[in-house]
Image (cartoon, rainbow, N blue to C red; front, side):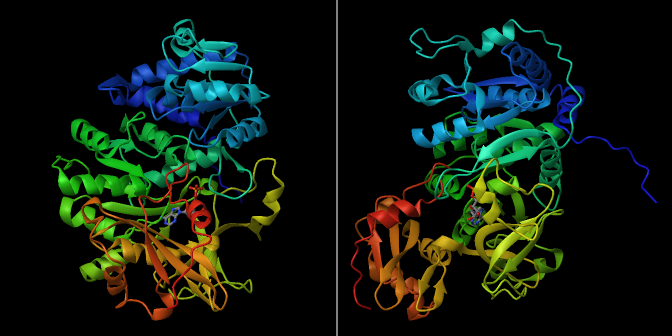
Amino acid sequence: MRGQMMDYPLTLTHVLDRARQLYGKKEIVTKAGPTLARYTYTEMTERVARLANALEKLGVRRGDRVATFAWNNARHLELYFAVPCMGAVLHPLNLRLPGDQLAYIVNHAEDQVVFVDTSLLPAVEKLAPHLKSVKHYVVMDDKVPADCSLESVYAYEELLGAASPDYPWPHLDENDAAAMCYTSGTTGNPKGVVYSHRSIMLHCLGLTMADSLGLCERDTFLPVVPMFHVLAWGTPFACTMIGAKQVFPGPHLQPRDLAELIQAEKVTFAAGVPTIWFGLLALLDKERYDLSSLRATVVGGAAAPRSMIEGFEKKHGIKIVHAWGMTETSPLGTTANLKSYQLELSEDEQFAIRAKQGTPVPLVEMRGIDEQGQEIPWDGKTFGELEVRGPWIINSYYNDERSKDSFHDGWFKTGDVVTIDADGFMLIVDRAKDLVKSGGEWISSQDLENAIMSHPKVAEAAVIAIPHPKWQERPLACVVPKPDYKDSITKEEIYEHLRPHYSAMYLPDDIVFIESVPKTSVGKFDKKVLRVQFKDHVMPER
Ligand code: AMP
């Protein structure tokens, strides 16, 4: 017997309709220089329809890819809806990637139109001669600057001004492509991940569940995570679905900009990678801001060290929700929310659990696979590669042969090495390639980094493997002292801090002090650069 319920398509058109019908009075704010630009969802949805008409005039058809090269702002949000809802495919480009990789990505995706913020025009002008499929450029501003060298270039506001505010949104198949992002940080060329309307819609429900992030209408949401990094973790879609007020920081991402914005707009929920929050924490330790509106921030994309979670919470009353995900997982995979019976544990035990990456959100399944291909027990000790599956997890890369190595019996192989405990909390031990393989033992660079970063004089720490004649590899810790301790910090202090918790085998063979840890295009520690920098480092005998 079949169920007798409607086969209602899960498409973003539904989100757009809801926003127009239900949330017309709610605000969308963008930081633009010293001022804040604000308008309502009523205006936003009308402009989305104008934009769809303009895109059609430019020749954009169903399935065509439309790229964006832009900061987090309201026009970018309009593209997030106009492009997928007219049946085309939104493709935000990572504006921090080197030119050759960007050209590869645009050519591989065969983007037809590129939307670009005025401040980013010089990069696109340089890139343009290498872009084979692009027919038009649109500058996201009132006018095209007089000295712009691009051909077939239009101004966003002129296109919208000339377009009708009515657009007959087509009926779409929920499995149609809505957006795509390319992975960063992998070796070789970036790989394309194509999200469907259905996957984004289900992911929106995932983000709004009380036991995951619980985003809701009463929230004022600040995506610090760039809109090119896994679609700002899907949050612009989810916030629009539930009518939350959205606050976009534009290019203003310095800790002071963020603190001022949170204070001025009474932000209740924010999202970003740990690097952003390290900076904000250091600022809050020194200067006073009223951030009492902030009920939580979600931190993911790299490990949120326990010291950071504790620092925000104990000193500033700001709750951190630690989450794990990937471009390939839309990205929400796990969140580290305590279960009811864990609330009875000591504060120390609770922080230890919340610093793990957490339990999978509903509809995502996880398992760990060991080197023999066996599933690891959920004992919190055994290491294995994390595999996941679910309706918002990738099933193949876009036109990419490497897809064949990325799946195992219908599960996606994440490349993350994990343990899973009896309560179902997953802990990322390391990226497989970052583990230090020492004499048959695996040393977790991430674990050591977190321990070093809990030292009060340390701002950041990255641990890398250095080849070793006897042990195969040994850990080297690259440590950034907090500015006040630059001249006084010693290696011995750090060793003393680590010794009570680690055997001699686990301790780094050497510690070097550096100015800053290099960052990837999405703000994570870039250990590739450190590996090159320290490839000839001579470790002392220990
Ligand atoms: P990306 O696709 O660029 O977002 O990178 C995904 C990778 O980031 C994952 O495979 C993990 O290695 C890492 N990652 C994401 N979230 C976390 C987290 N909470 N803790 C540790 N690593 C994380």
